Image (tube, rainbow, N blue to C red; front, side, top):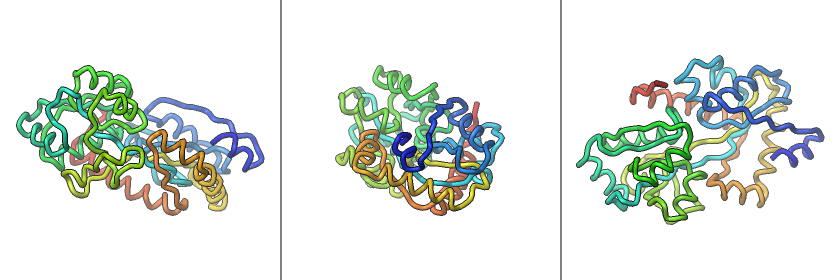
Length: 272
């Protein structure tokens, strides 16, 4: 988005990739900046989980100016090809017959991949073992190698493994079927009505940003990703544009905070 956004705003746009703390490092720097619209960041749903599970110097709602709910990325429920299941219902039955013997991986505690697994366990009434990794790549490698039996892999990183036939895809975690894999049912339609999880991507700024500035950034960024080229690129990455106003995203953020907090509490998830 950098070059077209620079053209739309009439000034240079500098992209700084800041890793660390499940994205919290970049968020902290953004929220410390002046709320003039010149500093903002693209973050993911760990904006909330990082704050809930670790000691971060920000509140993911009160200290944020919501700008845009950019996109959702569903997770894909994939299993090792040696596992004798070919549907979500068969997986649940297999897990019930083998309590605590199935291991699922994730890129880390509190990620949408991890929370998908926790929600699935609770909703299906099964017991599995969570194995956190330092990133999705190592977890997917172990899934292919048989050290893990299943994973709720982020679509953007998992699709290549599915298309190469290295893992077996059973369903998507989103509320609706996804355009990049329309043959895959949702977990909701396959076995657990109401089940829906997605990793979301959003644009935020520091608290106190003038509404007109947030609205301008919302409008310009949405116009860029809404072009045929922008939509095609996001679809290639397993993403679907959400859009809406800053107020829409603010309401979503508050609801997501409450939902995530309840899940972490009920599943007794800790950062350790």
